[in-house]
Amino acid sequence: MGTGAGAFIPRHGGDGVEARRRAASTPSTLIYFYASARHRRVSFARRKRRAFELLGFDAYDERMADGLQVLRYNNSNGYAAHKDYLDRPPGVSREAITPALGGANRLATVFLYLSDVQHGGQTVFPLSPRPAEASSLEALESRPLDAHVMKLRDEIDKTGSWEPGLIDDCYTKLAAFPKKGRAILFYSQHPDGSLDRMATHGGCPVLEGTKWASNLWIWNKAMPFGSSRFQAKDDAGAAAGVDVDVTTAAAPADVFWVGASEEAPMGTVTPGYTLKLHSFAGHTFVARRNSVEVARFVVGTELPQVWTVP
Image (cartoon, rainbow, N blue to C red; front, side):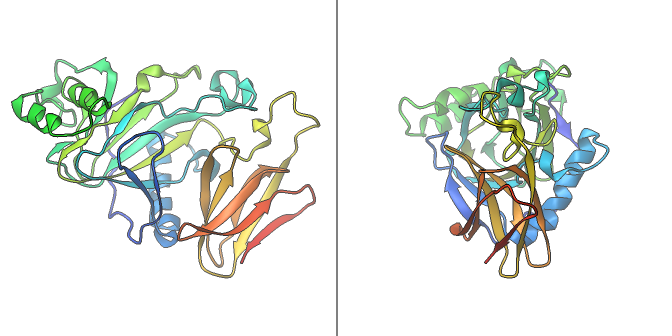
């Protein structure tokens, strides 16, 4: 696993937050914020390109990156330990989601800190011990699990939850503490394409202050959401990829691929800008403004496929 501080220095964070939703995998009140279309298309696109440069890619490919997200964690909010790479969803061939077999999955995470936090809010890797030299490495947490931290931990009234145990890990295991203007980079795959369970990580609950951050997931190849590669081999018929041009003459709209039990942000379409998707006949996309669905599109087989969002 490659972890450590990167040289990725963000500029200002986006304003005009919209399309908020509760994170489903944690019982905390963590809120995801998707930045406004203007910032996502300009400022956020610049950050995504810089992330590709940081990883050493020769060129930027929008299909290899999830949407950049801005997150706010209030006091006591955190995110339970998890992996960023995806498990095989129902109906998806093993080859499609397994990089070692030629498939696609999340390769790396770039996590940007947009604010300082007085206590807590670290990114912790609970399967990795704290390095003995942590105190000499500027980006790593080296403070002890002392009486002050334990007092703050015990003030979080969440009996039987995951937060207290993760807080202990945050001050005893490998962890990077949040500092505005810094970012961390870690990989979810080994060089041979096998997935790295040591990349399991969590967002330490904020003990004092408010944490603003942003994360970007980068894939080893074009992400398979909306791709013919996501068809299982036993599906009837031959899969054929379809290119879809998404346009609008109205206000900017956020576009999402919609699956049976999940969805993925594909980008923002704005007047004068064509959002290009590579998809598969029968797949569904929705367009939203201010989190309200304004249009839905099912990919057909005829060419060309053009979706004009009203």
